[in-house]
Amino acid sequence: MNNLKLLTHSDVKNTINKRAGESKFGEHIKLCSNLNSIYDELLNLDVDYVIFGISEDVGVLANHGKPGTSKAWNAVIKILLNIQANAFTKAERVAILGQLHYPAFQEKVNLLNLSRKKDIALSRQLVQDIDKDVSYLVSLIIKSGKTPIIIGGGHNNAYGNIKGTSLGLSKPINCINFDAHSDFRKEEGRHSGNGFSYAYAEGFLKKYYVFGLHENYTSQFIFDRMNKLKTIDYCTYESLDVRKDQKYKSALKHALNHVDSDPFGIEIDCDAIENIQSSALTPSGFSAEKARQFVHYFGMQPNASYLHICEAAPKKKQEVKIGKLITYLITDFIRAHDR
Ligand SMILES: N=CN[C@@H](CCC(=O)O)C(=O)O
Image 1 (cartoon, protein in one colour):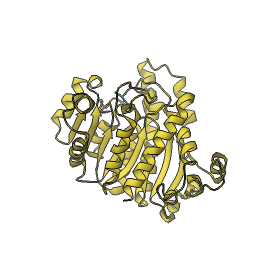
Image 2 (cartoon, rainbow, N blue to C red):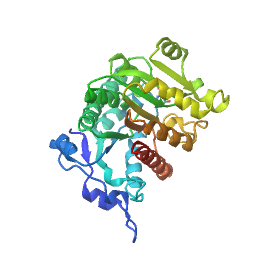
Image 3 (cartoon, rainbow, N blue to C red):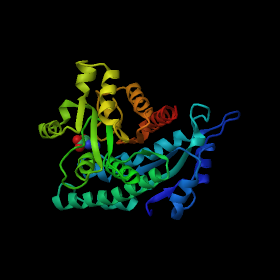
């Protein structure tokens, strides 16, 4: 776990802004202390949720997208540690590991010319290395009996989450993805647009549902590919929020029916939420409230096996807004899953 940077007590202390009479989330969470014994520590921790960040832009760049996803974790941790610790937020049930981070990969990819075939292939090899870390770490958390909450990076990391959960449970899993894109592109080398197609092709992903796909940003090739497969289903954003063909609640139920036969992962791509800075920022998309209701609805299900919130790419100005949004989604999941 060379690329895992553990969150320390002094990091937490330096991040918390204390206020008299208040108790902050960060004062009650558990930490791990030794990179060489993560699994044993996880096993012995009396918590239900293990949160970690993935600070990388490599997957998005390898998909010809705009970088910035490496900044989401830092935006979130500053807010998360400072929310109130109370009966609603359940800080004592949470361990925060820290972040997988890739400064050397970032440097390498910045030196590449990504319009050259050879260089794009190199960037996609780096994504495979990140996949190995993510799937290993997620599998350890699942094997320790805890629920992973993974923050950040590009949507390439869905692959590692699905594979890690599947290995941890020793069976293929299902997945629900709140996303403007299917990320079911060709297996042409790993990047942020094909995490689900790779997981599916390799047998880690069994049933897949894309919730809120944008009709303008899905190719006919992908629609045809998904339409052919009974194990894959989707609803579009336009059918829900523009044409109003069905109510939000009934769309949630329909999607749950598709994935709930087995343990499933919950993937939230922030580019499905209106005006959230991301590689594929959209001026027209789901509201933050709809995203929160989605996490609440799926988080409530006993089969919900992990939560991943990705693709947010905060610049300085939106750092607090994005940190707060993702923190709401994390705590919505914890509250719902605990019921
Ligand atoms: N994970 C996102 N993938 C999308 C968006 C790409 C982008 O515009 O950055 C895709 O490949 O279609």
